[in-house]
Length: 461
Figure 1 (cartoon, rainbow, N blue to C red):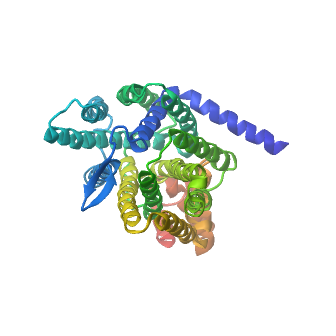
Figure 2 (figure 1 turned 90 degrees about the vertical axis):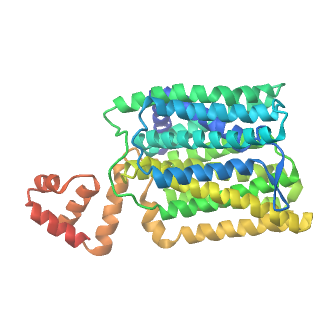
């Protein structure tokens, strides 16, 4: 009874958390709906293009463009200095709107000349990718200011809302509804995000900006994104080869992913290690296995499971990104662009390799063997990344559902103290340094000399 009451209070707290910043909920819902329309639908980028005799779905071009934009941000703008300027958000919005307009102009037959049509497609893809990745980074920045639990709360709520709206657009009797949506959504997103950003900046509980901590490479985050991108690319290759994609699959996958995130992370409070490697990856692997073993008889179930697994990982990793930004002091631009570049690059590669394998192997053999092999690889990767050391340390001590996220840092310090036999005073110094205190602050709090703090830190290192 007490546990049920506690879970009800968690759910109530999550609902109240969304209601505190409704503009952020609207912005995130608009972004997720726009991402579904651009990355899963093909009405803006229909058909295929030829690459060395291999026919690839045209959406692969958008994945590749997003990869290049992410790399540009990661290399040149690890710490943005103009993210809070009014013109920057307007520029991102203009890129998306103008890019989508060029793609629509080409697809609706407004450009008769083939060369001009190719220019419209290339420029449209480049502008759309630049705008989307820029918005992705800014959303990561604001989520990093709020923290893990709030990030996952808003993410789950927006996923539910985006799935319902997407179903409504898919059920509309005229296709113009989707065209209008991709043109209108960027304006809704920009207006809502601007208001949400002002709310977060005024809050005394948040720190909105680019921290000055040393930039670290999130190797495990990147490795996880690589596996996630490979599975998504293979799914796109399988769907493009079969020629079938139903919007209801994407909506069902989003609803399943949101419900699973709500249950496992926010209610049961599983750590990142178990959420990602013991739930997300096996879910993707199960979908791939069903696609290979059952084939057309369970096509709907396998597609929904694969989409749900990918989106579940996406939601949980948003929480991890927020943890790296807020709790580890990493720049939002770096945290958002670095793993996303890996995901998009391998997603592009997965589409290419999947289409190549399907074209080389006989139809039945290819559609059976490739998903089964991929499912095996996904499970192996999950086992390698979820090793014993990572369970006890690493992401194993980070519980996104905890209302007090400082407990995660405390657990990390406790593990280090136990493993290396730190004294109580060394543990106290380490704990305060992890909390962001300077050496002078630690000396003042513990009533010891600054040189003594330096000695303790040397022992810890």
